[in-house]
Image (cartoon, rainbow, N blue to C red):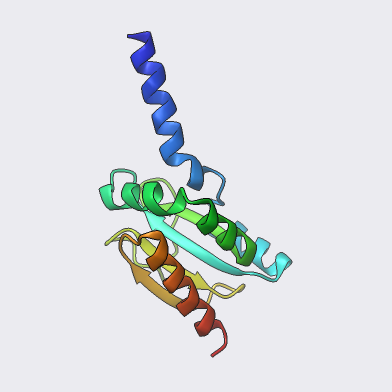
Amino acid sequence: MKTLLLSLLFITSLLSYETDSWIHNYKAGVKLAQKEHKNIYLFIGADACKFCKIFKEKTLSQKSVMDRLKKDYVVIYLSRDQHAIPDKFEKFGAPRHYFLDQNGKILFATFGVLEPAGFFTILDEADLSKED
């Protein structure tokens, strides 16, 4: 029984690892983005969302994805079950992906489970939106 509990705890920690190192407060994320002169990637999910879990496992677990995100963006993860989400963002239909300027203006938004290759395409789209 003890081994089972330890195994479950380990698996749970692996699944939530990538968003545990993220900022979970929108205002704090915007302040950091302004300080670092970076845009923001805001991922809105839900604790029991199976699609959010798939996105974390398949895409956010990839080092190449996280390296690019953290290089170019301040990353914020907000769970609609745990965190305050500003009214200007859609809370349902998770996972939601918002690309914002350093002041919080929405540059590009989409939703759904994205495989790593698809996510890189979305990052390219968001980069093009920055230049508009």
